[in-house]
Figure 1 (cartoon, one colour):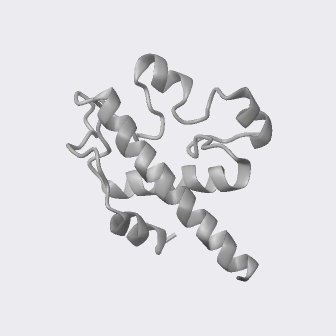
Figure 2: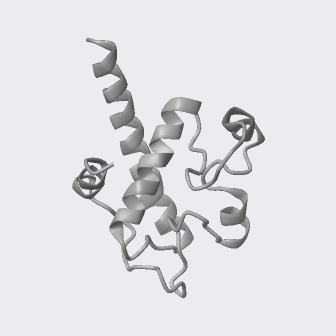
Amino acid sequence: MTPETNDKLSTQKSLMAMKQFSEQYAVRTGTYFCADPSVTAVVIEGLAKHKDELGAPLCPCRHYEDKEAEVKNTFWNCPCVPMRERKECHCMLFLTSDNDFAGDQQKISLEEIEKVRSTL
């Protein structure tokens, strides 16, 4: 197995883990994915990338001077503190039903994520 293949498998494994986590967390918290599934796909992809690179699903929608320090701080590790405390998701991954951008889905297909990944 080449290092590239191993990296790809790791990313696929993290992608599946973040997809499953996101779906379960949405159900558990009564939140919904964005009405635009490409937003959900991009955020899940970003979480998986950070999980691979940093060992934790750091919020992909923020700028960090030092990502490793942020991971250790845990404030922006998904689900972040604002989401856990107030159901406020900066990434628009977990939205309450009264949010104008909320859809009605708590699941996303791997095919939808892959479709968006192929355009990045």
